[in-house]
Length: 381
View 1 (cartoon, rainbow, N blue to C red):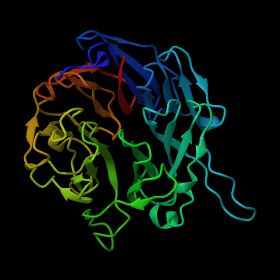
View 2: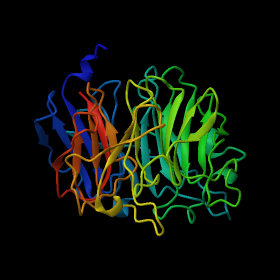
View 3: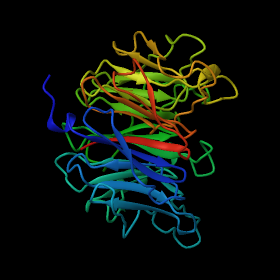
View 4: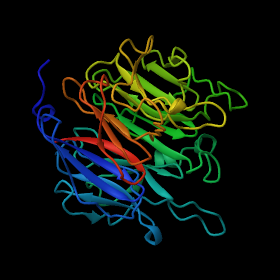
């Protein structure tokens, strides 16, 4: 299959950490890499994404201590940054009522290819925000945030995951800008067919043993969901309690994680799909026993790949430590490029960045000693 120009040129890894951001630039061979200076060192960066529509603009979340949560943007590939003039914010509560405020901006997604300048952000507490001016100003997506059923979908700020409930995995169908899917952790998967004006749950087939009703319509905890770019009707999910796939035409999630060999569990955070093959998906399993260790089982890190939609899995360990590799990888910290063969990249909470040039068959370490890594996004230059 012929590659686009962007799939054969240079690339960059946009790395968000607990103490700032970094950009690691690679040449077209993916063998020579050059590290940037630290960006806003000391600031919590949950996510940093380049706009694939112009291959120049980068939007970055930032939690700046006493200045609070905000958004920065660069239009020169990260050389200079400007703060949004109106970052995401929930509307003030009516007098006498208790309101909510954004604790941190968590997930960034560019809008549809035919909508230049449009971006989406998911926050904690759970909210969806949209920018139509390339990230300068942000407004709530009231069709979701003020949906009549929203209070039954979301986790209040004092409930849910230890770092707070989040809205993440914001996906726009490349065939139709009106078709959007997003996730609440916890809460579940939700879909819109009218560009966010109305939403409905998309959780049929999910089973969560922590719920009073395991197959309830809402309340699930998807850690990350991916829409395959070649076949946007194919979805993959890494759930708190399983790995799933869904054919949107059928609308039912199917558990595909039970085939993993012990001691590897179907608990983790990241999941990534092949940019051209809807049947190929990678996971990075973590310890799922009680209490949740959230590290590589027995200190032996591995990725697993399925090339038949999750029917069977192959373990990939070459290059990783054979022991004492107590990796933990957050949901935004594993991603792919679009090359042939596909490159895989992951960052650990221990500050290491790893890559594979051959679809996970062999791994090598690119960086050590960064702060705790929250996200590793791939930018095609």
